[in-house]
Amino acid sequence: MANKIFKSHALVEGLKTIGLSLILGVGIKIFVAESRYIPSGSMEPTLQINDYVLVDKISYDFKAPQRGDIVVFNPTKTLLQENYHTAFIKRIIGLPGEKVEVKDGRVYINNHPLQENYIAAKPDYQWGPVIVPPDSYIVLGDNRNNSYDSHYWGFVPRKKIIGRAIIRFWPPNRIGELDQRPQVLIVKSS
Image 1 (cartoon, rainbow, N blue to C red):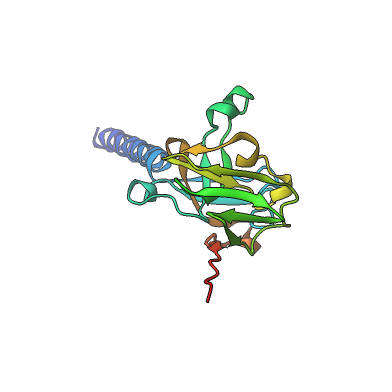
Image 2 (tube, helix red, strand yellow):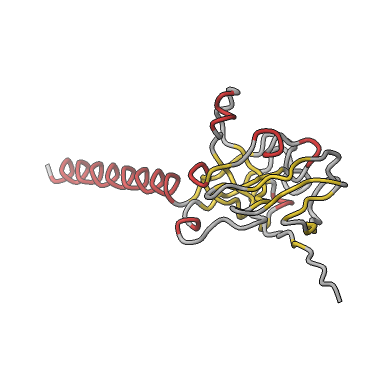
């Protein structure tokens, strides 16, 4: 009898542990962090096809997205109309209120060139100028000439951003932080 009670108690405790683990795992994925797979070359050379990244989903509850952040976001209204239903990953380039333009192989923020040492090649297109609306962002792929991004379909509303990619954790030979930030070059006249 005691053996039967012990087995029953062990089973209940085991089920409680499994249940709690599932609840914690789902809670972490929903509210804290999640992994994402990179399916395309639009972020090369920073992110390669088949890389996996960890996405921080809570830091933007405490601070605004910054230029240079690599963000995962749900499709915008325009993308949904074009039947895109999976999340995108791109780099934030333009912040709310900024004038953004792509010309002569460079991105310009408020008429100042953006220094970008992470792109695959200089953009071979002209775009803008556009003013980024409040609570919205311009996102571009690091593989500028092979990325379906804001220069095609527009702005990303803040509410669409899921989180910021912070670490590449797969493949093992490419493990590391994703922290390159572009700099706006402001030339002072003498």
